Image 1 (cartoon, one colour):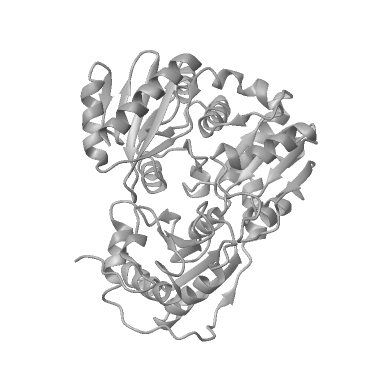
Image 2 (cartoon, helix red, strand yellow; image 1 turned 60 degrees about the horizontal axis):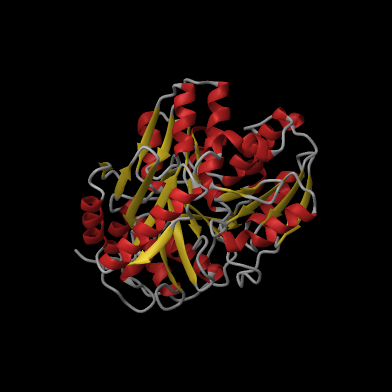
Length: 454
């Protein structure tokens, strides 16, 4: 059975890990109402909690989802504006069958969507689960008519902050000065409440939730979106900066010199500290993790597993293998004690604890994890990603080749990965090398090959 499109419910919105499309053409209130009914049929849920991000369309989509669940007999809990990591945590910590975050994460303001979690904190995504929900939208009936819906209002924030603080000893945190860029997403009020419990000085940037995103897109993985933060950290003589994405689950750091800290560097730093505390802890990392993570695992002789990129894969692998911590280049950091869910906020407090404990600048702590050079992940539009990957595998057949997640080829002094986007005709390129010159030459060589093959 395929997924049929209709106005306000385009088949393209059902992706590998979530539902995401442009409002109102690809997903509108009537479509969201039907999706809610399909989720109920797929999961059999009876108690559902729904939170949303700061997007202009989020309140209307949120209301339509509440309506859809209510109309099929579910008890509906309205969590208001909330971070995606809060909703993921709530699926594990609270008595809900399903939780939903109404969000399009870091996408431009015209986008909207939802991420879905089941009891225990598991994400519904990967292995065709979201596609299966899409197929069920053709089987559920009922036209959306806007009306008041009876819901129970729930404020998750106090319990969420207590949970985040349980990962550290707040009394050990030193009076650090931190600049935080909330990107006009949902992170502002959450971070403000968190830091109210810590002896830190916070400089706020773009804390007011505003779905127009007037300053920059809430996508801190892109260097242009943290340019303001980098300047402010230096101007304020701050100890570090933090940037959150639109739904507050991803976090990127800026060191005291105004230099970007990559997701791989943060993963390596946090992993190093967690293994210092207990080297028996099991670690997990994405297929395109940097060599700095490999070095940390080797240093501690730790048990670690490599997995495909993506929240759905990582959460399932963590549960299956008893993993304590996992990290991704994209700024997602996963914790066993967080029901295997990711949280930039938990990673943030662990970094504060680490700086406080070591009494060193962040750049100094990062030195062992900054021995390699990487390009930012680069996207190329191609007609057929598989054809391009096969050509590259032949071109670089003298390296160590693996196909765990797209194509990875490793040499003694550099490696690269190309993998297709899960929802667009794009090929994503990552390259790492032991020197800037080698990185530049190999990146240019690969980019030219991809363009030629496209």
